[in-house]
Amino acid sequence: MILFFYTLTMKLNYIFKKGGMKVRILFSLLGIFIFSLVSLGAANKISTALVNESTVVPITHELREKYPIKPHHAKLSLDCIHCHDGQGKDPEKFEAIGDEGCLACHGSKQKVALRTGFMDSFHTNPHNSFHDGLAYHCDDCHQVHQPSKNSCLECHEKELPNWMKKVTP
Amino acid sequence: MKKKIFILILFVGVIIGLIISYISYETITRTGTAKFCVICHEMAPMRASFDQDVHGGTGKTGIRANCVDCHLPHNNLMNYIFTKAKNGSIEVGAHFFGDVDTFDWQNHREGRAKFVFDDGCKKCHTNYTTNEKFSAKARQMHQHYNALIGTDKELGCASCHAEVGHHGLNNMLNIYKPEHPLYEKGSEKEKLKINEKLYGKGSIN
Image 1 (cartoon, each protein chain N blue to C red):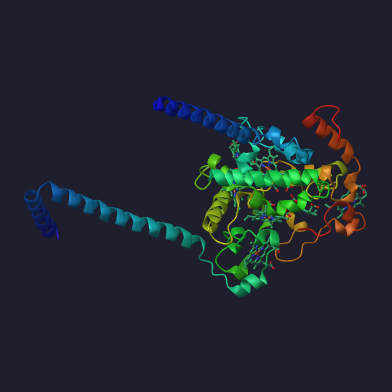
Image 2 (image 1 turned 60 degrees about the vertical axis):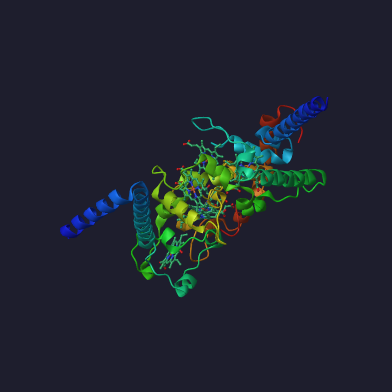
């Protein structure tokens, strides 16, 4: 191996000496070209590795039909993994994501409460209510794969349509 | 003699050119400020919510964006002027032909990715993909956004960032035009207070 490189460099040296400037420039250009090709390949490999790592969970068409999501999330093309990340590789074993799961995207309970803050003057804000302030959990009302059910309805069936959307998003 | 006339024509031409550029520069920039955009009162909820937002200058550094930074495309001057003229004439049309009060702003928000232009956001938020200070979720979402550019599922920054540029937009719209009956009580008074702040005391409407 070492011998091979040795003879190669000797030969190259000989060519350089004989060919002068032009050959030298040509060779360095070739060298740069090969170097960039190699690094391009490496970069490609790295980026595909990154992508593959986060999308290894195979999702079949049936699974998507079994676990449909609501239009406000569907139109963002959200995938299972955007909500169920870190829950293993078996989609059938995914679990609920809790308040933290929702808040990773929606910020904080305060932030969500501010979005319906105009209701505060009557204490009817579902995100900051008369009874428990910010203490309610998102899944007390919002469901992702089934129709949502507003927990205030249990006791305020009559008033609720005057207070907020009849259908909880 | 001929040379003199030629120079004169050249001189006059340059002057006229300068005047025209100055006028168009002034109209384009002046009609792009927050002040100009709220002359029409139908913009009151948008302006009031803008004033509460970091983009309206409430942030620590006091940086303030102009309406046109987010609402007009910047990739190309003709596109910019054309969109501006189109939006402007729709608004003027709405103003004079009287469907302002019935216009459903809440419903209009559904299409927000179409009237908010991302190249404006990206001019200020240049490193939205790599910023280490963003949460992991934010970076994941921004990668998702990048991956969909150029596909038929392409998103806009505003698809995800509701109320950006207009902190409390939903609340303001509900003060000006309550969606649920309960909040009709007292909304007139709130509205007057906000209008006074925007347009000065004694303003009608």
